[in-house]
Image 1 (cartoon, rainbow, N blue to C red):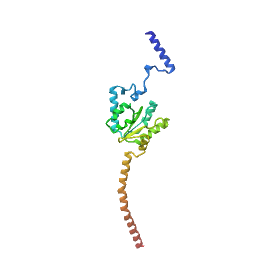
Image 2: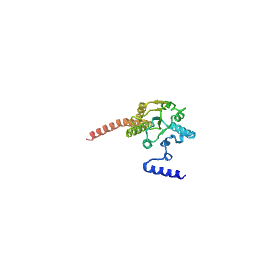
Image 3: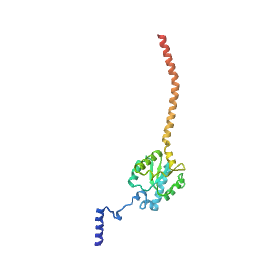
Length: 214
């Protein structure tokens, strides 16, 4: 026992000077992503993860994926904060994602389940979500290594170019605003047309009156 205590003391002292952390004190960063030590490794954890992904899918207008490797925890948190409200990002194992998309409009996303994926579940702001991700890759030197792999909207799979093209289209809210603006402009234009002849007639009467009085 005394020898074990001495050895532990020596290890602790060496760690303090060398920056080495004993294996028993280390934590895996994958825990944040449901990795080797995350809750998603147990049967109950996997069921909870699948249920959570299904809930996200139900609320999403579109989903798209990017490579999940070589992104630190700090970078992940930075990207998450940059996303617009209503967009959720999550690293999901392919087997769990496959279970979550079964029987949904996103079942076609099965062909995108290759390698580790980080998924983005977008409720409304597709353009803002893609813009935020592209800004992140540019600022962190990951433009080439972390391109959008593909996405799904309304049961159709799109490649990277397709996702980019969709992100440039007006959002539903923008379309509604444009339609509402056009509808509101109709009565105004009609009133202007009706009003203008009356104004011209009034000016003519006024001129005639001024000529008679002079």
